[in-house]
Image (cartoon, rainbow, N blue to C red; front, side):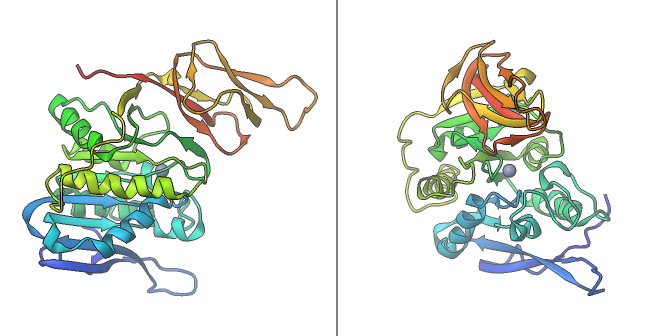
Length: 335
Ligand SMILES: [Zn+2]
């Protein structure tokens, strides 16, 4: 794999705290030698493991960026065992545009991993993460939420990685977060995910879906910040105190069948019949889609093919054929 073109303007080995940036060459119509900057924070404490924390992988999910910016200001090296590297705005151009995908190349950061050294800006960032940051890391956290398009019950997520020891260790960390659900999911929306790449490299990796449906509120921001702090405590990296006990035992769930992801059969306006957290049975009609072109035709019913808890639902009512409308998850037990 060729060498990154991104310039690292922090020193990963230097003791103490650095709030700095990465520089990405991005030639434009009006500036031949233009540069895009990505903020990066490095906090080096006592010798120990390295945690990599990402926010803003998708540009319309602001829980991660705000949480990591606050942690960058408040975490100090004397309370850290090991090294914490934070990229609060991984897809900064998308974040600035309020868009899920990068406005500079139209790409989804969470579909281009492991990236390309000579690719578009999103691919270059992914390649930098894969080749420069992942080799430094023991623990990887990628903070997501539903953004504008989806509502999620707050959850910490991971794939069903083949290495059972790795899976157990990831679940142990996820339990410390304090979110009500831990979800084991599969890739129905394509491959090339940041967490998938980190998992394959053997890193203890946690993703999240911290609520949303464009609801950016105090409760979810608190859960996100306390969750990151608790995971760092559980990993022995934040040494201020023991992790908070979760308010209720988190439920371990899996959406591990393709049919757990219910896609829109036609385009139109999706009217839901069921609320978040409802238990759905196979064959149940979970909503209907009203046609915009033929409004007085009967609406198209949307049915579940599996049973499970409604853990995620489409937030934006206008849907295109093939959009994910709902995800069902069932209790999961470790083998
Ligand atoms: Zn996301």
